[in-house]
Amino acid sequence: MAVTAVSWELYEMFEAFLKEKDELIAEWTPEPLVPDTPPDHHALHPRVITSKVGKTMVVDGRSCLNLASHNYLSLAEESQAQEASLAGLRKYGVGSCGPRGFFGTVDIHLELESRLAEFMDVEEACLYSYGFSTMSSAIPSYAKQGDIIFVWSKEIDLMCATLENAIGSFGGFCCGTSFVVDHQRLSGLGYCFSASLPPLQASVSMWAIDHLTNHPEILVTLRRNCLLMHEKLKGVPQLRLGGDDVSAIKHLYVAGERPRDVCDRLLDQLVQKAWEEGVVLTRSRYLEPPEHLTREPSIRIAVCAALTEQDIDHACSVIGRAAQAIL
Image (cartoon, rainbow, N blue to C red; front, side, top):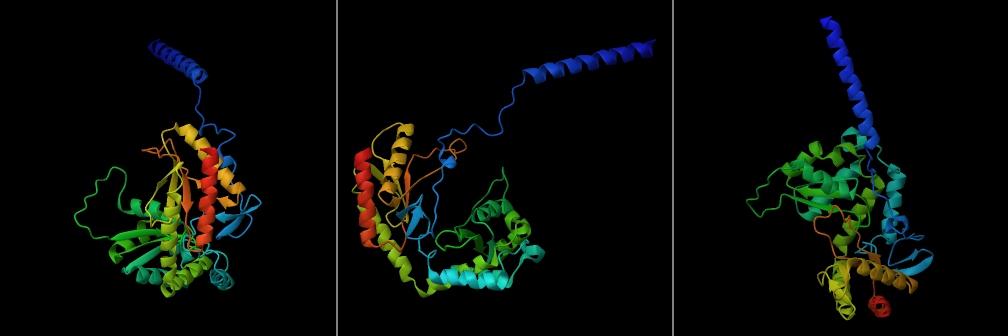
């Protein structure tokens, strides 16, 4: 009898548990994995390029002066860069199809790492196949969330950079002391587990470094263009200019105090108006909810070495007219 009573009590508890579970499930409203995206969200309406990226490019069917791409040194449109890419393609094919430690190391990877270390005047460099993964792999190689980092000197042991903007290629690299760089070959997730940089892209990067070494005047031209663009944009009263005068990146903010949503709308209209007049601009975009400090809405201007003084005058005139009409 005692066994039967205990069994019945357990059965009743189990039945109550099932009933409570069903009630909780019925009351529960699951949250979406991602929030609803409004139909006018910018990510759903990207600008489409149908030409080579360079000083000019065709955007949404219109040929435009390009102030949007990070092609600072104007190497992306160089015919010699394209020839280097084709030479790499013919020799190595289109991809490596393996991480560096699993038959993904090609001789040109080693040559490029050696050349980068020499160019940066450091002991060693290691390549990553994707620019963003360079930083996102390098930091977790040495520190994890919650770690406390003590810095006791001003010496720099590690530098990270991308090959995807000024170089006009693909991937990224870390460089510094051999002790620090070698550690990433064992613990950098992007280095250990991603397919290595396509050799044809390594060919382009090799050419670009040699080209910069032999033609340092490109940097002088870019600096001159940055200074001129900065000076011209300061003359647009409806906009506030941000960024260093020698920086290739400038930010244009709405002058005065206006609500954030109003600034967003006005800057979008200005970008559209400039495109209609043959100058392509882009808005700065951020992941706003996760950002610790929300950035002010702006238009991002990218200056390149191929721009002439006439190009800069024309672009700033278009921006000035658009700002006057909209703001």
